[in-house]
Length: 114
Image 1 (cartoon, rainbow, N blue to C red):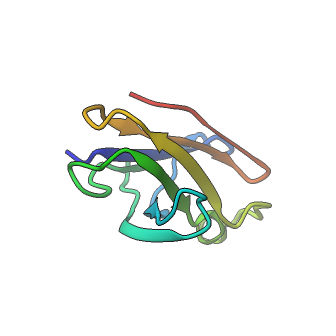
Image 2 (tube, rainbow, N blue to C red):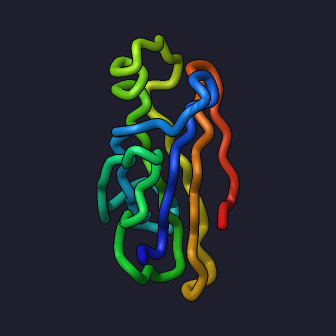
């Protein structure tokens, strides 16, 4: 299993967000001004990307970037956020990190999942 997984739920439509492009990136420096791509994928029919990235990551800053603009266009919605970026601090190298996104055209939220 990937060290980092994600899923996207469309709160406005009340369903999983399918076919959302997702990237996992690592901070290339401690200041988080430069990012290195690690993996990319698309959400499946259940809105999940179960295999995003390597099985093991070192402690550090990472981010998951969601292409929400293309998703909104594909579903006929006009969204305010064309991209959502969630930066997180991976401190426990043995723990699984699940970074979900709850999405609607004019709002989003996230939390540390399990």
